[in-house]
Length: 429
Figure 1 (cartoon, rainbow, N blue to C red):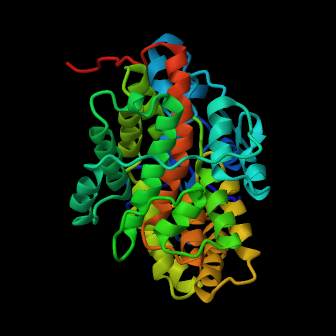
Figure 2: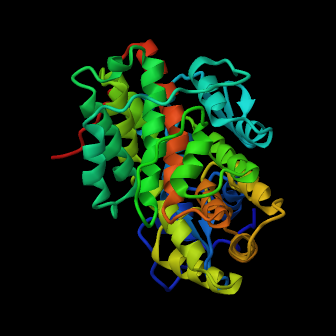
């Protein structure tokens, strides 16, 4: 990671204003009660994110990282602050899970590194079954569900207006599917695992509504999810395209207790069926950190004409926003291994077109000139551009892949058998 310029001395402040969620070195050191050298150390260890869009000025630091570090390392009132720590990145409170562990090399699913699974050509269905059961099948073919007669009517209504958020579109179709199945939608599939597979089939078909000419596209009989996804996206089901799509879905499949996953577990703990849990997760994914952030990252990358122009655009964005969409994941200060894996797959292509090559050069320029480390969102954006996918595909790919992890956490929460209900500490008058 590129180290920031030296923090400003305690007696100085930058003259220019900056967003409320970024603070200067003086404020950061005062909040933590540390000297400049200690602030440096926290940044170099990845505990605090810094940004320096204008190299001529002092670096700024993310307020949430400063507050999370203060809460974890300098506050000793464990009882009073337990609930707050549980809700902050880097907090001390945890929820036990046997599904995914996050390390420097990225997430590991049931003890198997996600990047290895992706590079070894694992099919998405195998990854999903691994997350759900703990066993990695040698092969997995899912049967396409029988379509309730009323469902196509829902699709026709939704297709007339698909300009909203990607996650909202997917949630609409998941809820429409559940509505067509009756009062006990999950058990209409006879067993929960079939219901889980069917939800993924519905989301795969719904992605076809993102195309210039929207069309819900079911997987053909005997087709894999990646093959059905290629059909939905309107791209050839070539060996390379399927490898890219499977890799993307596998790398997106789970990331421990991300906000949307936590939302799914809360719904599951309250007895909601799988459709309601997935809908809750999709709603929580609509925000800037995931869905909207993916789409913005893709838009900026698609709009780039030169690496220089792209870097200038990112620098302007950094001055106006608290963070750069698609970059600088707080858990991966040296770059998200999932994004780097996707970019390596793209770069190895013998048929990489001009737009895909430009996207990779732009991302590299951002790393070198701004210290912006690619996150999964920007990796998915590069994949969408190189693969000829329609706009808004990155957010859809992230949600479709993550659905496998959401389902795993739903099952685990049901087995745990307790209500997830954080408490609030009243601080009003």
